[in-house]
Image 1 (cartoon, rainbow, N blue to C red):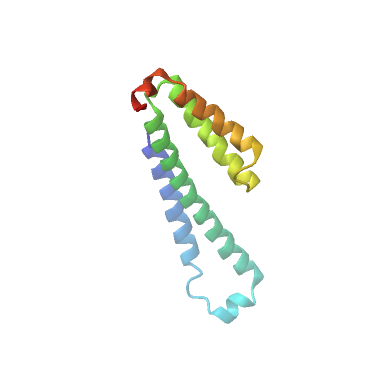
Image 2: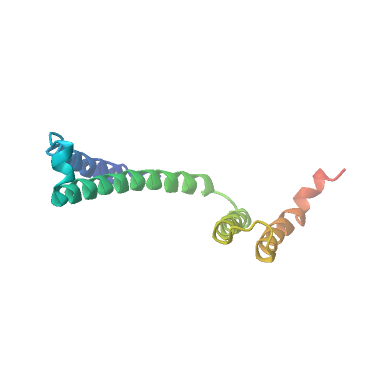
Length: 123
C-alpha cells in the first residue's frame, strides 16, 4: 500500500528544493557559466529533485507490486520470485539464451507444467 505520509514528506522536500532553486532563476547564462559555485548548487539541487521524483515512483511501484502479490499461494509467489531472478540475470548478463537463464526458466516452467491443475489444458 502506498504510504501517503512518505509521499507527502517527499513532496514537501521537493517543494523546498523548488523554492531554493528559484533564487537562481534570474541569473544570466554568462554569469552562471562563470560561477562554479552557483553551478554546483543548482546542479546538486536538480539532482536531489530528480532523486525525490524517482523515490516517489519507486515507492508507488513497490506498493503496486506488493498489492498484486498479496494473497497469492506460496507456489505462485515462488514463481514470481523465480521470474524476477530470471529478469535480473537477463539484464545482468545481457544474454538471453545462456545455460543459467535456461535453468531458471526450466525450473519455473516445470512447476507450472507439472501441476495437476494444468491437465485441463491438454487436448
